[in-house]
Length: 96
Image 1 (cartoon, rainbow, N blue to C red):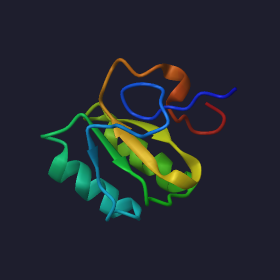
Image 2 (image 1 turned 60 degrees about the horizontal axis):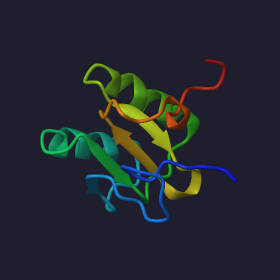
Image 3 (image 1 turned 45 degrees about the vertical axis):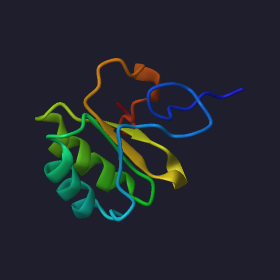
């Protein structure tokens, strides 16, 4: 059985603090993080379809503010500043 990160616990339903369905591209995700990041330490973007290069750029941008990424393949990305997330679930660029 494989585990996947779906919010505050392992479950069948994603439960991050905030879900933004309108953001589908890199700059929309960045904009939403800027807009909503003051209210939430975790934002889920279920419709985001980001390339590996997009993920690298998002991570590079977000690290200065403590953001980390959880990639859900075809179910989007979670951007989180929570420190209680197991490292196993965090996205890392290939080769790192």
